[in-house]
Length: 254
Image (cartoon, rainbow, N blue to C red; front, side, top):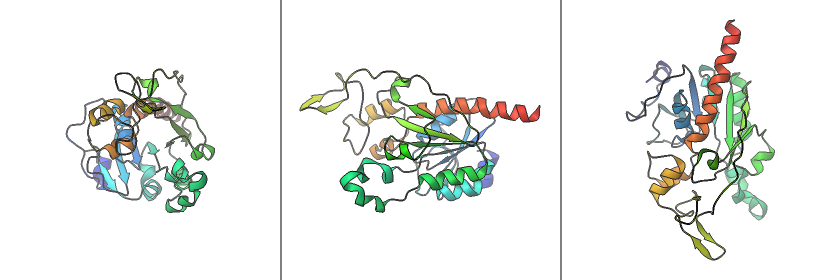
């Protein structure tokens, strides 16, 4: 475990983490959940520390059980990059239209998260699914599973701040059918290409199929997989961030 994780009193990392060369940088993985985002940053070379208000026993990196916004505000300056994926219920379809009355059940965490990240002066990236949140955030990057050869679409938007710039890769056209019932007919995994990873099996597909589709192997809990983002997304973001952060540091040192 890194000196920073030890200093913060974080829970130790799992022993099975895949080896990779360290890029010399650390990322705070706020609202870390099971660690889909954290794994991508790890594979990109970052040391990762996660924070979540709920205990995450299968989170594989050093972990702090703490409020994410408070953790960003208090500790964010100690990291080279802040990554945050606030819960999206406030802006999702479950609280839209005739269901808008349900919105009061959920906290609006997008603006507080952004304010906390901006207060640190550090580079940051905020993730949200498409929906009403798209009108309340700057969309610097949109990623889709097809860009990485995954069997999920799972579009996600990202806002970059604190001087961080992200480049948008080409959005590869979707190809094939979505698995599940469509217009009264069941599309099987053999016939369809994309799994719908949501709910407790609502998107069909077995747990191993979900794991492979998302690139998440360290949990068999459907809910945990369904709430994660594919590590491939943040591996790309981590690679871009490494180049930008290191270039900025070299410019200051010159």
